[in-house]
Length: 258
Length: 258
Image (cartoon, rainbow over all chains, first blue to last red; front, side, top):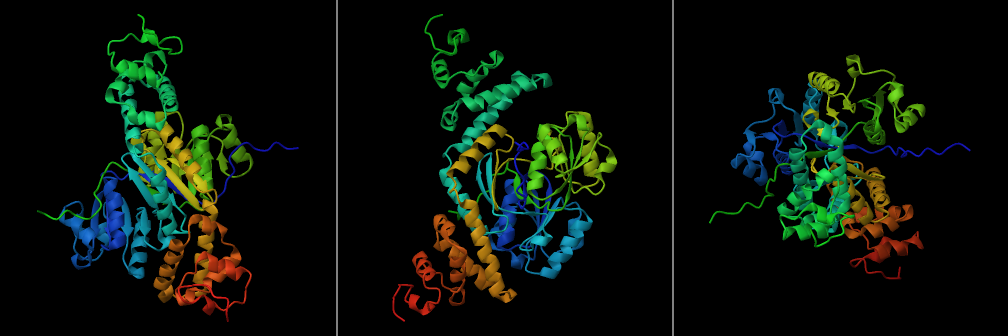
């Protein structure tokens, strides 16, 4: 009997879901209606420089608000090909199939990633429904089978998540930054990664959410030994800032001595 | 007092999470180690044509398996610039910072979206942790704060989801396709969308998972009226294929008559 391969089986039919980096990149949004408003919001949340091309008369209240607040640049007319100059991404949401297709073709000539709303064949990428909590982003895609379902599932997931999920991730992120400060060399990389993995595996989310700045400084004191203390150890250290780490030896059973 | 804007407030600091379409697109993967194996799997799941450039001696067992199964093309040598010809996306995962940077620069000259593993400044996009269940894809990103946490959260979400989530989405997708067959005109669009929304809102996930092919055909019989029947109505229709829909009139209170 032939060996069954132990590697994950390819399903096909999905998308490649990726976190596109558009900080300080120029995103051109053509159109100023409700769909454009959603696109603009997502782009601003990712720190893009957004330019909206649309006659003022056709801006919906949200887009008009973003323009008035100078959150986006605004070009008060219909699209012209020169608007593509310098654009890193183009999002089209206008009720004009012929104009949309013309813009899509120009984008492809210039190799600019583009999304023409509601025209799947004229999209390098689709949008999904995104939950956001600080550094945490969760995107739900049904690969076009049910956009409304995607939004239902996103809300369902948001209700299941611990309320402090975003903050716990922030805490771990800060720990990673501080660790890199005390062990900055490239050759420290493997030990740093192994220790961070041990930290992630040692505490539950709830416990991570409880960690204070002081706890993290105390936690970092264990890095040199490669060990990760139990939560009780960190709590003991709170009232004993000068405690000698040796007291926690013996698989971190706590002893009052020293 | 000034009006408080009623529009969602921009947080910044996130990514633009998108579902990239790479069906039949050429993705070049440089490297054949563990990270490359993960990238290749994601691309194959999205129906890309994947080419792996790496000396055979450096292929890990999973990549070697994909090559042997002819799931990917394989170029048995180190990267050469001509490998970029025709590439729609480039993913680099080799332990050679100088080579990686050189490939990144070539990709930028040619405007090819690229990801250099572990080098955030040399990435147009990042990967996250993805849950897949048929048409449903859920991607968790911590925006670089904790890749291991992203994987923990993804597993947590997978445990919370109804076991039939993917199938329920498939069911709704089929309904949408069939609806387009019976109401194919562009001018039917708004009524189609409104009715599909009503369907999505009328049943819970569990109920949707219970719907059979027969139920969907019965459901479609209500489209002309713009109504959506209660689940009980659909169940009644199962044993009464020739039933007259009029019996369900009066906000679909069921009556045995007719």
